[in-house]
Image 1: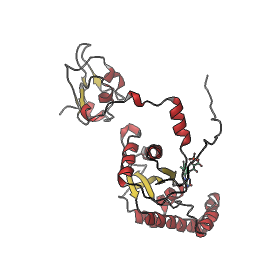
Image 2: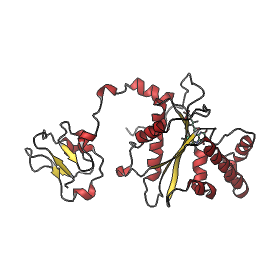
Image 3: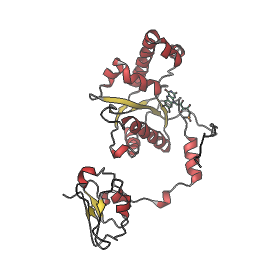
Image 4: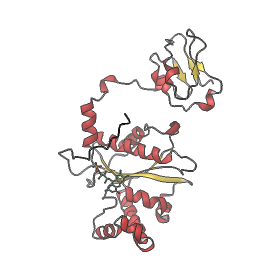
Amino acid sequence: MPLFTVDPDLCSRDGVCIDECPVRIIRRKDAGSPPEPVNGAESVCISCGHCVAVCSSGALVHKMMDPKDCPPVKREFRLTPEHAEHFLRARRSIRTYNAEPADREILKRIIQIASHAPSGHNRQPVSWFVIYDRGEVRQFSNQVIDWMKYMLKENPGYADSKNMDMLVRIYESGDDIILRGAPHLIIAHAPEMELEPSAPPACVIAMAYLELAAVSFGLGTCWAGYFKEAAQSWEPIKTALDLPDGQIVYGAMMIGYPKYKYHRLPLRNEPRITWSL
Ligand SMILES: Cc1cc2nc3c(=O)[nH]c(=O)nc-3n(C[C@H](O)[C@H](O)[C@H](O)COP(=O)(O)O)c2cc1C
């Protein structure tokens, strides 16, 4: 099967697919002929689907993507700058959750949305691991605290820089400052950087998509930075996660229904911007 086919009766010959192909593997013999793959296109194509998505007539069918399976862009859903700003500024890190669990189907849908985040060369290296059970999430908090106690003994300089002493004390007073009593924890993992250099940013960007998508389902999230760090080095957590060989945790997010509502948009520093000209 060729990399893509073009229906000559539907194709408008506007050449937009040629202009938009990020790896320049679409050409046409002359202005009157429909586009075709260049020699060797198959090995260069990143299957990003831009050729399919930008074709206004649905003439181009990529072997990985049929326009029939690609939903149309709904112009009426376009956000105004005011809506986008409000949506982005109103998202908060949530640290107090209701006991009510989220439906697995909803979590799956949020992850599916997050899977549309950009990744280098469209390699989509992110895999997901969902710790669904609240009790299991709590056990991971315990293990992070074990890691912190170990660090306080073995690497006190580093432990001090992260206030681990204080975190352990708060945790031991009964306040889960590590995973905040969240009902669920979603982990983004990917191959180690040596094999897949785009893995860390891909996981972080997908997580950023996930935390924004969650808001629209009424769910709240919080990055689990301490957990992520512990999960990269602490053997008991690695063993408990039991990820496939060579997979590294590059992002973790607490998720659940927020107990409280926020009423204002807090302020942030003015951006530090330098213009070259
Ligand atoms: C990479 C990263 C790691 C974080 N780790 C934690 C964490 O372990 N625990 C926590 O309570 N908040 C964590 N946060 C949340 C930040 O504290 C929070 O984003 C920041 O205070 C701004 O608040 P906002 O997200 O509500 O705007 C983390 C955020 C990021 C981006």
